[in-house]
Image 1 (cartoon, helix red, strand yellow):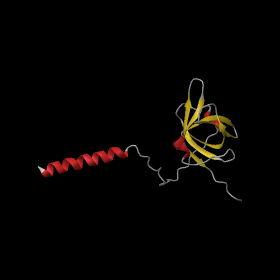
Image 2 (tube, rainbow, N blue to C red):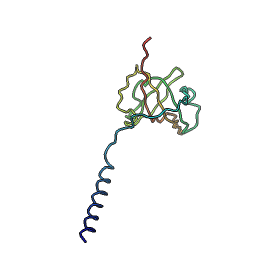
Image 3 (spheres, rainbow, N blue to C red):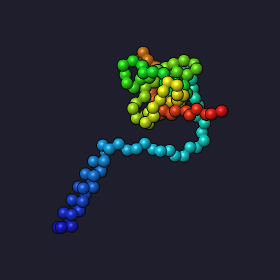
Image 4 (cartoon, helix red, strand yellow):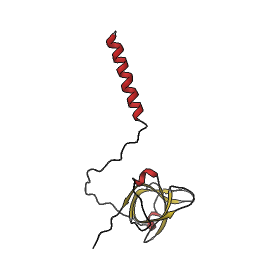
Length: 130
């Protein structure tokens, strides 16, 4: 009987510990294998002609906040500008200035009265000294 009671208590502790861990923030992955596939960078002008949920990669500058939403920003490249939506976790702790060149990975978010990019990943492109 003692063994059954002890196993029951151990089971409760294990399940309780697993459930307590669910609410904790876990660090983002630090990197991994890159297979050498070349990603295709598209322009803002091209994005404006793409279908909803099309995956895209764009390079340019985030100029300013857009509207009253804390997650919407004005992004610009050489061909034009578009609104991008960037969730807090997608910044990955980076502070981006309007003078920084960034690569944004995400998907086209096309609605009845809007076209923007829903960003999944922000990467600051380092300036290469010449």
